[in-house]
Image (cartoon, rainbow, N blue to C red; front, side, top):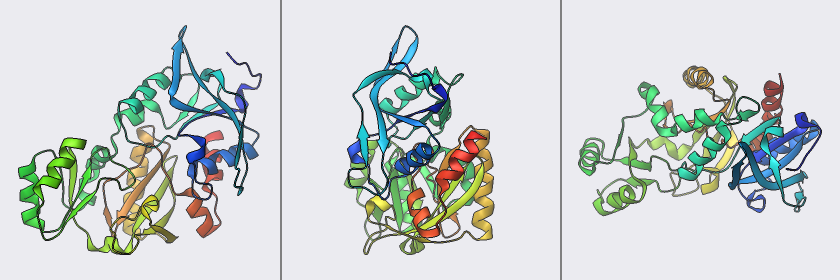
Length: 314
């Protein structure tokens, strides 16, 4: 194992390939840059590089130095095998989908929770399916069903005329179907075959004006951005061409957000993102790898990366 004396100064980051990060919009990069300012060293690894040997959890990866607002924004050292118990913190920051690979990573990291602070807690994110968890707050959501039954979906469509169907474990707006004038059974069956169960919701026309992404850190509502879909789209995700603009929460949105924030903290979720269209929670409670902090910083001048680390260190 690679040995480093200053255990408290190491943050391990479980994430996707370094060259896939988007310099100006990546929340993981923002968190790492803020950590570096505080004297931490960053160890970067992928899910596939985890191992347990002699009852120690290790990962093959790189110590990385990040640079702000540069085309060549990282410099990595030689690949090594690192004992993750020597980390002060571990950040779980790989993109969904929440599949068996993701679940396996939580089982590896669960062995470390008594000695290393892991964000978000691996047991917590394994137990909280983002869309299933939102059903705890059904009264704040638009009419919604979760099902794999094509007949239930057809009945729902006949009632509401315009519906949106989302894969249960989908992310970043991928695989979402919108039905307006025609019930396309083949398309729905294909989605169900490929993805399993789905969340089906009444379409909210105000989505064309954007949704609000709310940032929750350590049980507190810390800010929000509005994400506006591109022309002829209902998808407001930044990765799907959405544009972030400055916004505030109204009293109802703030109240709902605070209720969810307290429940997330009770369930050991430190960092999360929730989404509203109008005053409706739309059922995506992002606990696996929340995004949007760089956009919030650009719009408001407030770096929630500082809030993230201040709260964690204190």
